[in-house]
Each structure stands twice: as C-alpha cells, then as structure tokens.
Image (cartoon, rainbow, N blue to C red; front, side, top):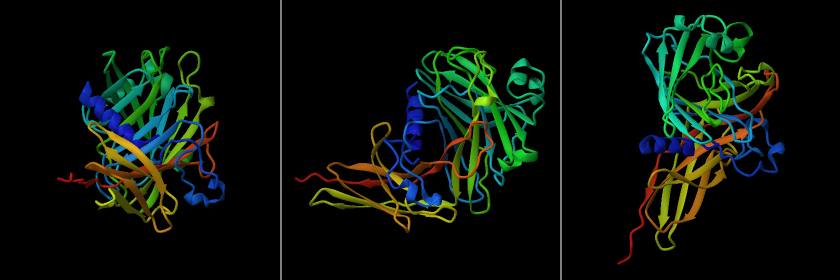
Length: 357
C-alpha cells in the first residue's frame, strides 16, 4: 500500500465528484537486523495499517491519517479496533457536533467522503447495533457520515471510544471500535454497500503529537464477519504501524542540462528509528496526482540518491515507507500479519528544463 498515492486518489475523488507494495521481499531480508528489516514489499498482498502525519515534530497538533487497507483477495473486514498509543494528546469526549476529523472510504466499486463527529454516547447504550458490535456504555461515540459518490448512498457508522484498562493498556491508551458495512449482508455497521470495503481512512484533526522522542506503535485488531454479518472474534488478526517522532526526510535536486540528467538526493533523520536500509520512493507530480517512478534504500547514515533522465520541467517528491514482519508477540487470536513504517514525506522540488532556442 502506498500512502502518497492513496491520498492522491482520495483528493482526486473529492475534486471530481509506505514503503511500497510491490513484487516481493528482497532476498537478504532475513539476514538484516530486525530493527531495520523494513522492505519495499512483503510478498502477496495482505491487509495492512498505514499512517501519515502532517507533522512529525513533537508536541504539535497534527492531522494524522490512519488507513486500514484490505486487498481484494482478503476476507472482508467486519470490525476494527484501533489503539491510540499512550502520550498522544487525545480528548475523545466532546460536545455533540464537535468535528473530530474526516473519513474516506473506498470499496471495490465506489468511494465515500465524510466527517467524523462527536455524538451523545447515551444514545448508543442500549441499541441492538451497539450491543452487537461493542457492548456496554462508552466514554464517547463518534459517527462516520459517509456519502458515496457513484451510488449516492448515505450511511452513518458509529465509532465507540474508550480509555483502555487492565491488560489492554499495553496496546494503547485509548481504543476506537467500529463495525463496518459489508458488501452484501447487513451488519452492526449498517446496510450492505454492494461491494467490498478496500480502504477505510480516518483523519484525526484534534490529535497532538507526543512530547518525547520515540517510535510510537499504533495497533489495529480486525475481525472478519460471520455468516450473519456479526464480527467473528475467533478470526481477529493484528496489524501495526510505527510512527517515528520526530523524523525528517530531506530532498534536493541538481540538474545536468548537457546530459538532461537529474540527481535527486536527501537524507532520513530520526532519533527514534534506525535509518539504515529504509525504502524510499520517488514520485513526480502529474496534472492531478503523483506518479511512482522507482525506489531506493537509505545508506547507513540515512542518505539516499536517485539519478534520472529528465526532459521536461516537473515537480518531484520522495516518501520513506516500508513493511515487515511483526516484532514481538501478539494477543490477537490469529496473530499479527505485518508492521508498517508510517509514511514520511519530503518537501517538493521543482526541476526546470529550458528549451534550446
């Protein structure tokens, strides 16, 4: 899954209505230290959790995108439980109507955009929908207001938000539980959508980054539905995504006009992440979105370099992203599938190619 391309798809959809998942892990992955085994791909497509933040600085309010990606060949996602790491500034309890962010959904045949809003949690204490998904009272309830672009279908999907306690505190400080609409069977997440959910992207706009440098691990527990549409807890698997704070990916460009060749180079800097061997993707901005051009890996000091023939003026950017096997044990019934590195974007650079007269 590629975060830059995913966000471009959603941006294009809005106007018009990761790490890179490629062809297989490199052969030397088993020989590398576990702290630096992020790869540009990880074999056959699997569900994954992807992260992106508008700022990787400490202690600032930053838009944070959390994306659950479910490939076409995977079983449907019936329920998502997302754990927010400790030390984030997170205040889920708010007056009804408070905007908490935005939601973007892509199915096999449609897409939806909407808002995340706080509602009165008392309204969801005794409803059959809530009891089938996340029984009991909750500290807060948010709703995903989804309006689909092609079908014009509208649906409201609740998210149940609570502070963790007991053993669950090892997973995160807060948890968000949501049952998701399915393709053809009604579920606690609502009426059928007609096609399988492929991406659920939650953008939190009131989240504050931690104040201490560390690698913050976000976790998602995902359950498949049973035949009746209810979540089947026995199928639950875990996905993880690592957010290094602080982190920076630089980019500069030099253009050889005689040979029409550009050297694009930069460096990944992070106090929380080993910077050796991290995949970096190169992109060019087109008319409406980004085009992936190729990938490289950082050197021991975090530096990377691309050399490309350039014949026309263009805007370029890079993104550090990767995926690996999960580190450590999992409490999910079927284990942890994979662990991704949160996408770290560089600033854009523009290469100007002047025509000879």
